[in-house]
Length: 371
Image 1 (cartoon, rainbow, N blue to C red):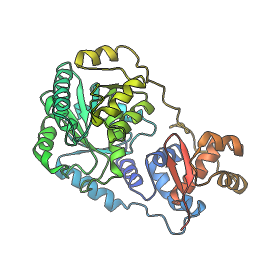
Image 2 (image 1 turned 180 degrees about the vertical axis):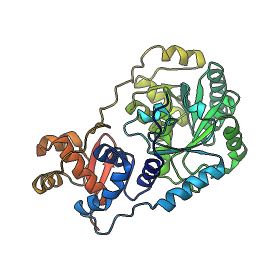
Image 3 (image 1 turned 90 degrees about the vertical axis):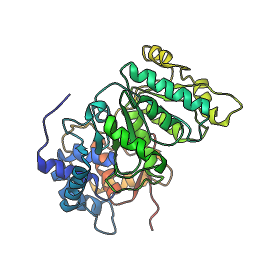
Image 4 (image 1 turned 180 degrees about the horizontal axis):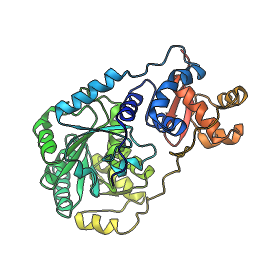
């Protein structure tokens, strides 16, 4: 569904806001809720960071940097979409928080279709790769867009199996960076016949901290996530966790109990994930709410909430005293301090922009050590 187009000044401001120091997806969302638009939020950033105790002036992304990124995306033939653009994928816009900016190389129509994610081990077995490829091909033939992460192993098999029907690869680096190198031709083919998606600016090499954000987009674009092979500690299980937090279903393909590559996927089944062996099982499971399904938590701050009044110094001190190095649920801070939601929002924004706050999974926050 297409909405009202943003003005060019607001689009540029949203890109600048997303690329400014200490502004992650949660802070971006809360700044828009607080100020109503990115132009006003940009102007307020230095003062907010100063109130949070920043020791140096916050680095706000200049307009020239945003314009360079837009031009780079244009040279690649990519679409740069900020939150609020009419063509921004509805499935991502519904996330809490949504990614502020994505770049897409390929056909945007694939991001509007019903999608299923398939992920698994990089060090996949031959049987696992075959199952992944055949299942992806069959689901693609049923009209689903298949989403994965373009890693070697299961991801590669998934993309190859669904290339003919249109597949989406979510990258951890920029759209112009090939990773892994062995998938150069596959990445090119997906750009021509499907779509490549990334949160990172062009020219960004994938780093370890980028992969959880990639995994969150994989699940966020999809109705459900299928785990084909996964060790107990793997990126595939991180993707499954994100899916549950987003209210998506998680399915798993069973594997041998003697194979460590299947221990994670087998555990998902033990924990209640529907067991699937083929496309028919997946389609049947989609018709029935999964045992692991749960509603996502409501956002702390409503996306269209009016700008609140600023907290006074006493309330800021009480909130700061309730924070520490141990991740603490935001709800606990509200109860302990008696703060209003707007006051807590404003204080957390100031601390994060000052580089003093860390957002932890499960809507928890912690103070970073000063140094």
